[in-house]
Length: 400
Image (cartoon, rainbow, N blue to C red; front, side, top):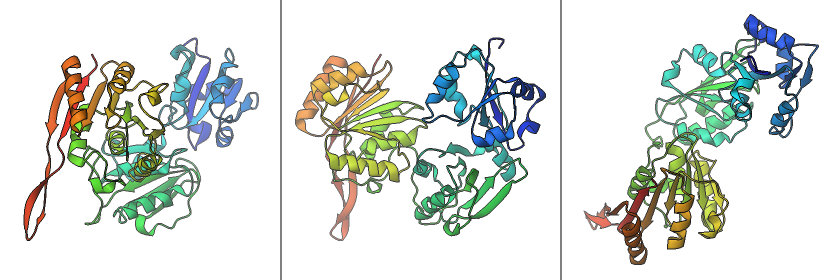
């Protein structure tokens, strides 16, 4: 602590009055204060050099490193380590160089205003990020607290809710919490019409209509929610595939031969902050994958144009790999070499030739080799019969 020259301070709408005496003393003794325009209004030290957020924002790290040895304060809203700049800055400096001074976060204030237990809700941010990512969290009776990106965001979210049969969801916009100008706006998603301040936090209580779309975060979404050309990993096989890929928080998936992106989309929905790269040589299928990712609330899906294994070079090392297309020994070798320790690899095969290749790879490398057969009930004249899908051979293994 004695070596700390960089202080990341959370501040609320009540400004210096809401800080502890020790934190106020840090601001008053600062030589440099970095923050947004509203932060500089809330915390005033006329003796300090004041810096605004640089553009691009990544230049902030260089600005801070150039001032090492001075007493530097970075101002953030609320808790600087909760969807804020604190974590980004912390990755570039030794812990002994930084002291964090948290303030009540917007989530905590909103939870208190709504009377909601934070243990029973989802917190997420669309501030400076695609608003569509909240779609993945729309489920019956779920409570959401959302850091928004501007005055138009609540209206966009209201439209997402209404389109999916959640128009009766109750929405509350909370602005300037803890300050003299605190304001509250309430309404239903289907009739939302408020003009709200740009800097706000949105509380949503999801209410589903009888015809609402029920899209779980566990794998196995209905095939019909995806735009596809008929070539895709079907629902039952997809669920089994994701179970073997083991989605984890922050994990990266390579979806080789991603097609319409169904496996990558389900990976991203299954684990928060996960990442996925879809490799697909066909432009029409990359377009479908991008559309599916946006519609299903995972706009972070990255798509790469190229043929495997050449297209795999230079990509970040993955935690899991799914080979749904472009299977070859060379592709497997490149994937296996790139896979992180404890990484999971799953390959599915439909043709006899690719199934024979998986059998040979299984002999050499071990793992689990299974055949998945699925039949679906369909009309057979006036009656009902089973219609089998093509059997899929699935090979999976973990890199030890």
